[in-house]
Image (tube, rainbow, N blue to C red; front, side, top):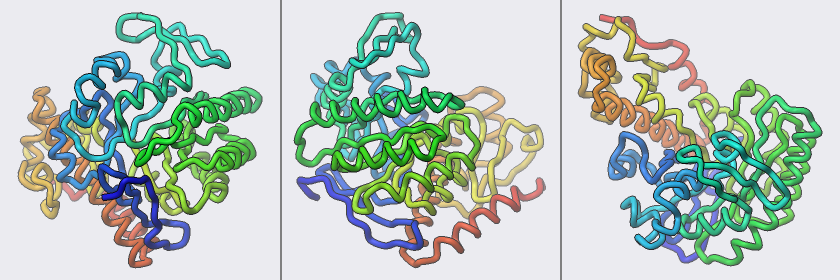
Length: 376
């Protein structure tokens, strides 16, 4: 354990990086996938299970927690770690993305953004200072700056305006965060799909000497090639000795290609959301348990998996649960999916350590390309 926030590179293979983030509540092995615990819970999972699968850190959502149950209430109850019974590191996003995407009647100014709750229509104001205050009340270990995330496609002038506003908000967040031993505030690189703006944003944030840097405004519907081009432009501008976090990404293929470009941390709702909708991730690709062809299939999802959800339950049973709308179906498939994602990250870390990342990436991709085995 440590009383400070540090990042240490342990190995590299090309641009791929193997490292460790250390903070008082524990270490995060990188590259890392952070399960999304939007409202203080990783949906359809016990947090003990999430930990047992290999998760070092989870993500909480500032917007949702401020609306319900309320950040001040969480603080009175001991903070998010105590509230959710997760004594390990937590990263909270700033709430900016949800304000922009979910809220109604929002109004953006230099000061911040006013909006109405999607739950009951109540009016709120989110400023950079208030975002940091809320994240402090939640007592998260890594806190994100408030930024403006522009939906793509957008005009370059609009992207530039939002990027510049996000930089000014980053300065205000840094001031509001101050010095908090053992914790970190990350800046967020914006710039849409304009490489030159991404570079400007990254350079300005680097000059602020923050403890970590995120890449935002991607994986919002643009082609993967565009996302990768933006990473190619951005990652070289970020300091090597600080962690890099690609927000909201993504598919296993996105993760492999982003690690190859120097990204250290990821989060995405995809594995949990897919599990709740009958979709399983495996080393042979995705399996849709809604399909009728699974109704009489006695095989498990993956007979070689260490995860009981993948190894011990038949596809026929999982199909039955999904078609019947049983909660257990969502639980088992989410368990399987998070297990798969954490095993993927484990394999990536080991491959970088052995300087075999390119070869291991190709093997993983070939497994997906071969697809699921024929039905019995």
